[in-house]
Image (tube, rainbow, N blue to C red; front, side):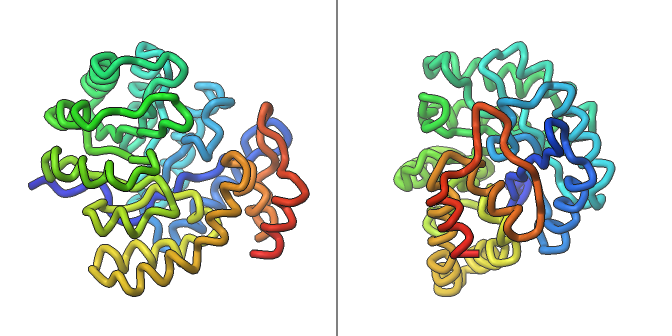
Length: 288
């Protein structure tokens, strides 16, 4: 049986801005902080990294910088999804050339592809590169929930490593695990469901809250991987108030505000996202 591409926590890293440009010195601080906290995989330019408002040139520069500046054993997973298959292929190939260790590819948004279209989209992207591809199912963002049957078909493609499942339906984790081969890895994409997903066989968490609490999040998932679900559950419950606050408004508005509160000024979000409401900011300040 193939080993998972990674196990444990992968932080979906925020993109730090200085005015309207990427703040690379701060990016290096964030990379080091995550690594020192025990995190060994990062998503660069995912949803939390505001991929929708980054140019391809900015993304590729960030992929190169993260790979060059981060420790050698820190896996850099590049967000290269698009609602255009041709664009996703071109960006995925460029990310591979930039040194990315793997790709996180969100399902096509707005187009609302059929199951056959989803299969063809992902198969075309995977066949265009040699590095591992992680599917990303997040219906609340894309308007489409990838069917388990599509996962089963895609699991036959050698470099498709698995899926970041963020459908908020814990039953779907069970269906994936029962209908797909063991080598098709499931990573939970919802911080509040992490331990439940691990109990059903997920191998880790692609996380937002670990931007703020990487050590606690890592301990939670590590305990679950070790089968210590009493500890994992206690840590999950301790994180829930912060997790709820981080999703009080659309991600990454709250997490970027929280980063500034703990001493990492990553700037604001690019429009059309804006700053948090007074209520959200006050809640975060109380929690932190």
